Image (cartoon, rainbow, N blue to C red):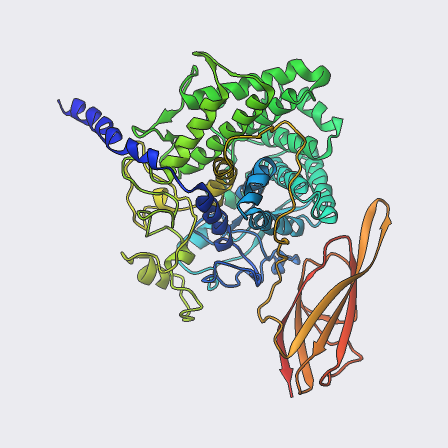
Length: 617
């Protein structure tokens, strides 16, 4: 009797909440918030355009002990560690979202914000890849970090940097980072050609490194094993990187790599029911199916058809029309595991969304074991998953923080759960944070807008408690795939041909250039930069930039400390001391109204320059 009562309850709940779906959701608002979340996850010097104002600069010495600048990048979730593998997957999926649905993002005024979010990650990857066969894959470690509950602005935990190289390989990490930089290079191709080329060079080097020196990254960076163990190995990342490099270059080498290694690396053999930061096969199979539908397979068509069969397998299993279907909650949510299940929901929903458009564009239908399925069913199912996340579920809870009226208030997130350092600069100690802030039963003092939390259990149950990390912790890779699906749902239902060449439209507003500004240029000092020359050598375009610092005050400038980041070439006219720059040797002070000029040359957009401190007398 008890069993039958339990079985009826979910059905009763479904009847109660399903009419809510008729009300519809503001997908544009959800998209805006989901992009905003990435600004809360930023590490490093925050730019003047920072919209999540309760955050401040953090991790400003990252990499210093190893002699490398690793300032920047993203914290992965509710902690303060920078894990390279999930960060790279996040950037790949943000880029893929833009490549498929950039027009819809532009129409909603969100494209420039989405591109900024990608660039925050790729700027960091450039720093993390200082040599062809060296890649830094983690800063900080989960063990010491999880012992403490501190704002990133206060953290006292170890910030050791961990790397892979020829002797300590990590093909999965290098492969995913190659995929991220290749995908991002397409995003920037028309708006920032020099930067796009730089990303592509890094991507090609990283793929060569991943393929030549094979090994699992968590065998080299062992501190990652407890948190981001590469269970699937690296074969999927090698294929994933090759697919993105083919998309970025049209180079037949990468197409041949996919064909010649499809069987041995599992691309044509593995029928998957999940897609995420560890397991990329379904993503590879979806991309290769796209190449096939675009007519690019050539004499590899027979191999690529096997990839497509496995892509179909994934889609059918998500729909519940395959031979091995994914589990779903009584409320209809894809359920894979109790810890941060939403990562699989958003990733699967994105693949189903793009696959629906690929099939529609090619005039094909999906072939499942239960029969032929129209592409519109894939999009409808993806929409149902997004609607569940936004509140159409048995609890009527939005699992996106800040969306709707009923959303998680006690998020498992250090920065959100502790009062902003801008409101109360009192230092939060390692263990004191647990005693004072973690254990509070009140709502978070800072709204982590747009964050997708781990979500409910297999029976649609959810407990909004900070210590319930399996359900209340957000992650960047939960949000990244959702950007594309939300953009697609917000953009209407006409005029799609996802098989045409990708052209990312120019954002309505210029892409904001992050400028590390502990102290911004004031009314007393000004900084003006301009490009004065450019030339091409060995296929690379170099730029000469002139920067003028002017003393606009009525006093004499006795001392100035400049912060310069994203500088990839030589600089003349300043004296470097540690990580900062000051007056050149021939200038002791700068009188009122006078200026000093310095120049630098590199093959990138202008560096970010700001005034850290100065003295007037």
